[in-house]
Length: 250
Image (cartoon, rainbow, N blue to C red; front, side, top):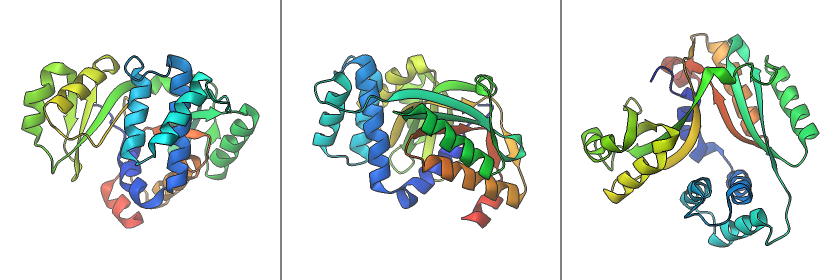
């Protein structure tokens, strides 16, 4: 692909070490609640909800928490009504950032995001200013310890895999169109291939190479600060930090 997401790889590696379980659960509960409100509480007929439940189970969220989140989304239990809002802006070195949120108070959320962006040398932009630089894709990771690239392609290429990237030492990164995402995921599962994560995400059409240590450090601090905000669900950016620089900053 022309520009796969470097942030997705950094986030995946950092997540198990840095993210607090409570923050992960908060974001997952919001996603389940919104998915159930928009598409109903039956995961068999609501692909977004099914993916959210799978992600929650992979994070070891208790079944009761999942059930309650679904019921809050369908209105069977009282709960906060979250609104999905995507903000667009720029970071250091002119990188583009898409910020997906689920909020019960848009004024609070936009003020927080504007403050974080400004603090780290970025700025909030108008709707549409950077979204044209990104495309929706299905994104699936498969542990390299559980399968081979050849096996994955033999089993699921005809199901709709667009690209498979193997430069990560731990996982294969599989990209699909949003329309073929479920088909590819189900084909892999039926073949007994372990799936580490699976989601519909947003990837950059091209990337901005970052080669200066200080700029890279500022970008990562900005992304971390945004990610730690409780209203922020997902982050997407088009930066590509040199691997040698990342090693220095770890």
